[in-house]
Image (cartoon, rainbow, N blue to C red; front, side, top):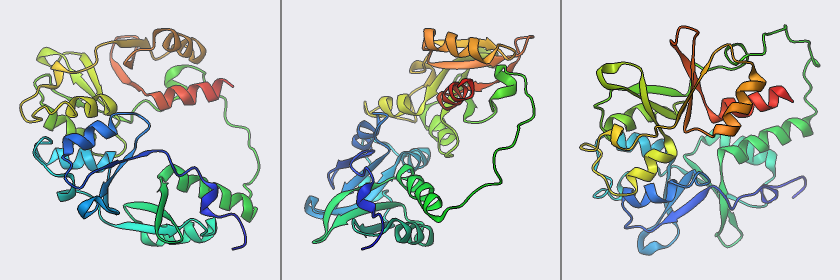
Length: 277
């Protein structure tokens, strides 16, 4: 077929397999590494692929109160799978995916042999490539208004987090992590004064993978406590340097009166690096 095809993409990363009789605790163990974003569930007799469980779907299911050590992955997996040939042109693939809006996209060779998983990141690459090939152009670079180059003015610190009380259990945390934009749970200190720790998505999955009962396990027993607090008026360059040196579990941004302003996420840190370039 003419033009670049799906096979040009890196399709062999971001996923892992589990057997058809796997439990949600097994899925948690697979999702614990940062590189794995989706788990593909084998079909009956462990042939083919019957469904998928993304990080977000895993958290939604946990939020319903299931016990990961007793719940089969196959009973709560996503089953709207789209299968595409690896010789599908990128433009056709983008059109089909947008039209179908599947839970997961599997790429196959002729003969239905599995090649890989097309992730949301891969799809974004297709969109970018399509725009470049289509010659779409913006209105050209414009001069942004001058801004103060400190933490609070340069970054969006009001997203990606949610709060739980100090006596919250893991099932409470899973409900808070279920929305796709929430990447970290901030755990209140005793008597709800201040913030005692944080629970990131990867850490949540690591703990779930040990087989804990989410309805009986306190978040504060497994939260991360290496918290860095910086002032909101800290110059961006200085903030990046401090975070790079300390490598904390979480970065909280406070006003000059020690009032919580927001959470500086790994994505915000990367954005700060780009801004400084």
